[in-house]
Image (cartoon, rainbow, N blue to C red; front, side):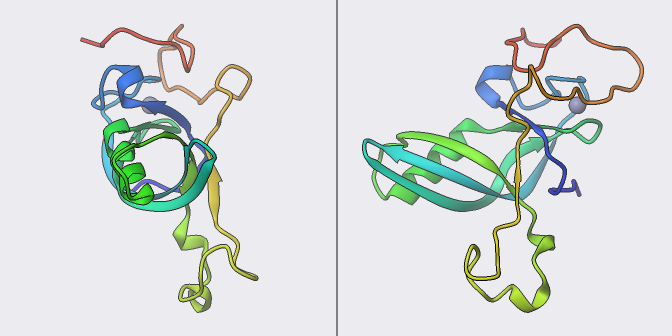
Length: 149
Ligand SMILES: [Zn+2]
């Protein structure tokens, strides 16, 4: 299991060229069920959703997640109840284990029960770099890269 409480660099599957290898360190990614907070915008309609599913590919070696854009488009369509995904952004992961057991039946985000949102590291250029074991790469996070062979 990956730890959802760790802030991660976020990449999109169609930007990084795949869901197999970590775009930052090259390690094989692991597909895991996690819970996300996403915001969908269609014109003036903006709605937040909590979505759960196997929509992310996590690196076990560095704080990186590759999000499956097709799955999130589907979440957006289901959430908005029409056939357009609109524009959407993923705010981060929910660390459900951070919710005290006595509050788990209460609505998330309600009084005294804040959402345990773990935001992504959203500025790959200015933020801290993940530690790498062994060789370093000259690839900057967020840069488009060619498919790794
Ligand atoms: Zn990695």
